[in-house]
Length: 96
Image 1: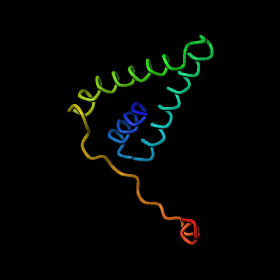
Image 2: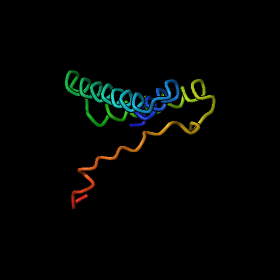
Image 3: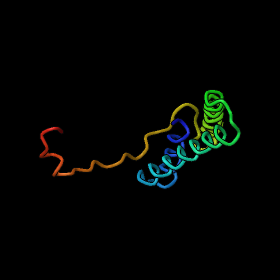
Image 4: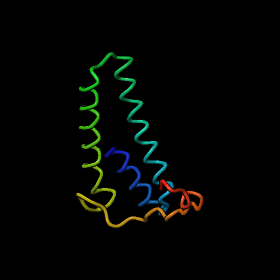
């Protein structure tokens, strides 16, 4: 999740479009999930060990690339938010 959020922030930072950042963040998380599945299934790796290794790799990548990309460590400046989308039929439903 951390790598997906980082990829989303990078794409929002460079494009200014939060929708592209959202899609690229989901793709980044999907790639990491596929990598975990591949290692667990094809190499018969222990899933806990594989997941722990991928989490540590993701944390290392994010920590290493924060300063070169955003110019500071720890957190980014304010990025563009996704605009509010109003879906009128959902507003009329009693459960929501």
